[in-house]
Length: 308
Image (cartoon, rainbow, N blue to C red; front, side, top):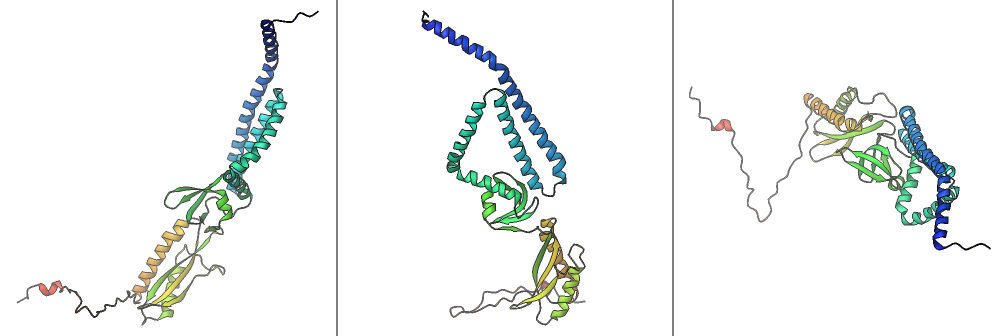
């Protein structure tokens, strides 16, 4: 007949059993921890190798960076699952996967915006209307694309601000790409006098444009031209269109445009064309007797007469 153990005996027996079990599983747990550490290091090395070697040769830098992040995440998940299996905790691994599936559904409803941006980031990694360093505009945000992450797109504005746009907005809103094909058309208006010869002015403006080395020339698809656009109050307005390369949008759209405007103005002035200012009309209404206007005399009239 087996004599029942006392409470203290049961505790000692339980501790002894747990001690034996812990001694047995410690090597496997240590192996699992070792696998996690080594796996994370290997994942980091593979990711760094990919970035340093292949990123330089990639035609799509945004895609390469996105895939590097994805590869690292997948390798770490695989490492954790292998570590749990090696530690004899395969049941825990199965439970984690099951719980992760259920949690994903719950979190999907709780964090819809985060999930939406994440999925949009995956779509944009494979299909998007811009690349790194492209100049784009989304709604009222204008700047250069610097990075594409899982949740947002990083844009650097021309005034130095860093803006992070949710990927869902990038995916659903219109995107204006100013540098996709490398060409951008600049334009401005110049007014000449009604008495000036329009065709001569147009020829002179085209000569000025074509003489600048940074303006696209002799390209059928990107033609520079000048057209009459308006008969204004005091001028005949000519609209000037010219194409430039947009490797650096700031230079092509701001600096070069200013240089062309200056050159056109100087050439027209040197050639004797009038560049009239707008005419201002002054009116006297019924309750006004005169215009309070004071005309200053020529300072030379104030000099004493030369008696010599």
